[in-house]
Image (tube, rainbow, N blue to C red; front, side):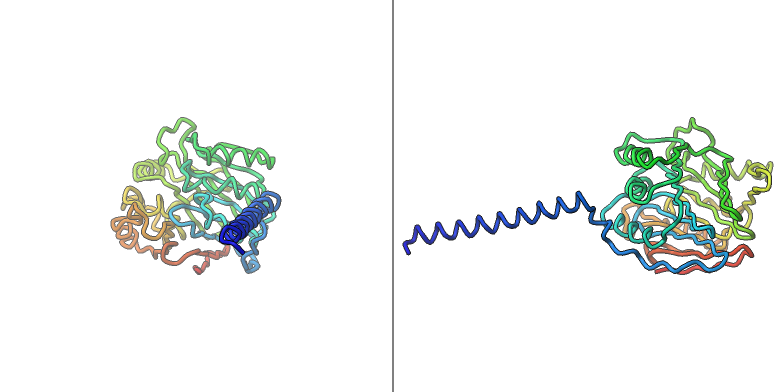
Length: 318
């Protein structure tokens, strides 16, 4: 065989190898288009709830937020959905497969991508009964995709409104903020939620900062019944579980605010080595000074609070 013939055969082999690789890539892309990869991921093992158990899942989505409240009736409230990153979306797909809620209501507490980035994906795959938008929206692609996914799945789309109450049969969630649809600051426009289940209470403060904390505190000092709606009462003293505002930013969790709510447990959602320095040393110190026990997703991963109507609860992580 001549040198030219050998070179020709080598080029044919290389061409065949490249062609096979390209064909395989095309086949993978086609399969993913027809049957998305993540739908094939196995469900995460989620234990069946105990009798009368309400569960708060603070999911580790890095420098972002995603909290799932699983009610005893089998429904769930999902507050934010992480940033939509590949690894986070994979983890959320497995978790919500394992949770297997009979209905889902979603709240985008804030229009930033670390809160709403993964919600379109979750709604597309698991459906939604309702989607609550923050008072101040965004022109980002992630925000538009979230709304589009909710429309396609036939969800009721509402903007978060102060004083609204969601009843879950024995448990309820009250909207404390935003103040109005005319909000102009994204963090201040965050949706703040209060959860009550018998003697157990929790507060989800999104990205609000000390300015909004002070407004809420002053209002409550003048009239503690300001958020009450019939039997749906809101009492901000002695909160059992606090979802700490803005990933533990120093601009939130003021001493005055914490002096009112006095959370027994504080959960901070933040990413390892994040560039913002969250949680700040100041916020951590103020939480410690008010006697709160601090749990962080960057250190512990997913954090689960199991609560019961008699006020007993326990904290686990994995």
